[in-house]
Image 1: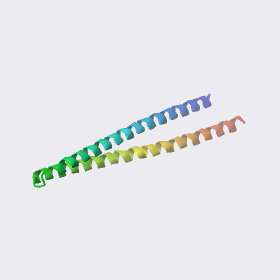
Image 2 (image 1 turned 135 degrees about the horizontal axis):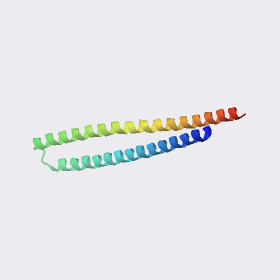
Image 3 (image 1 turned 120 degrees about the vertical axis):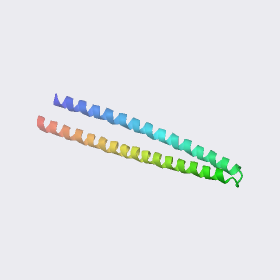
Image 4 (image 1 turned 30 degrees about the vertical axis):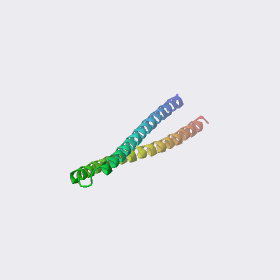
Length: 114
């Protein structure tokens, strides 16, 4: 009975870990797509800026402001990516802990049964 409850808890934990892993993977995919979109926007902006007259100092100032905003967004996204990567590492460690706990439970059950 206790073994069934423990097994059920382990399975539920594995499902939660799997679901968290899927969500993190989706977050990473979304972040990657966002970074690609930002990269494409930066490339497009660079092409447009080179086509304008170099004497248009106001346009240069605006372009610098846009690039700074993109840099801030990129840094922010990078921070989110680092958090997601840490969460992924935490999930891996949690999976190892679950395996260790399962082994310990099996050992205790075998020892108690003997």
